Amino acid sequence: MSTGIEFRLSGTARQLFAGSAKAFLGEFGINSLPEPGRDSLHQLYRAFTHLPYENVSKIIRSRGIGEPSTVKPSFRSPAEVLEGYLSSRLGGTCFSLTHCLYTLLRHCGFDCWRALGDMSHGPNIHCAVIVRLGGGKFLCDAGYLLPEPLELPVSGHKSLAGRVYRYTVEAEAGEPLSYSLYTESPAGGDKRWRYRIREHAVDGPVFEYHWERSFSAAMNHQLVLSRSTGEAHIYVHKHSVRHTTGLGRHNENIRNRLGASVQEMFGIDAELVERARELSERAKEKPAGGRR
Image 1 (cartoon, rainbow, N blue to C red):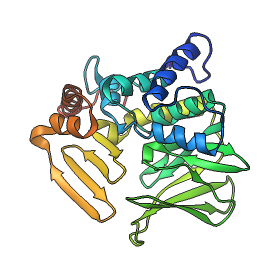
Image 2: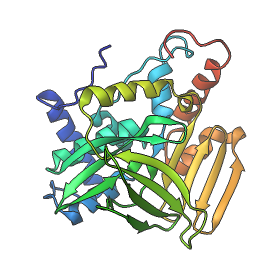
Image 3: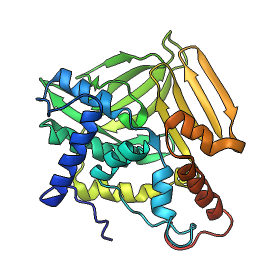
Image 4: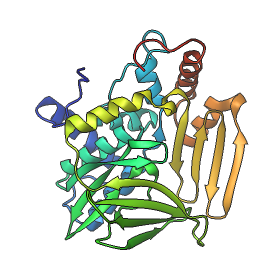
């Protein structure tokens, strides 16, 4: 199928993205394109991590026309993702965020590529950006709330201490070269395997194929949002919210004021949230039709 997205920006698409990127970077005081370097990578990445992980936009985009039980894969371009944040504080899911971050870093002159990863519930369902810089390689994964670019080890492991989690990436033996990401509490303990990312780059058609498949994933049938405040991670699933800090977790039921609560925590308009909830709930009322 034709998705309408351009994986190699040219002509009008490049101009549109350049305008969106300028406006987005200006939001964070970056008024000119920085030269590639460690400091500028961290600066760009920190700005990008303001985009939340959310499937509100994905549910509305893929179910908003016709019967909500029919999923119609429709990709949001990098320009749309940035404009969505500027206008509505939207973000995206891992594929749209990864492709947008990849495009932004390439726009700024970085040597980077998209990589696919496996999680506990399936292969090739996660993705991230890997940047080659100064003789090293860095994992950039805004979709998983990684607070800073994490340098990949040649062997052994490397860690990044955050306020909510300590992140450790371990090199794995064998081919293709891959790395496992683990999290644990800042004080140590409760170590959990999160995903495995393969180092090699995936080209446009392969990335697009797995992105399209993500529209049929279970998470596209229920609301999921997450963001980092620096001091805490906020995770919304269906009608519950979990606040995680370095000291522990707190859960709360927000069923009766879902839209308003998400707007308070994420800045996303309550009407968009309620529209996405309505579409996902209506999809459960009848057997799925069309493409799943």
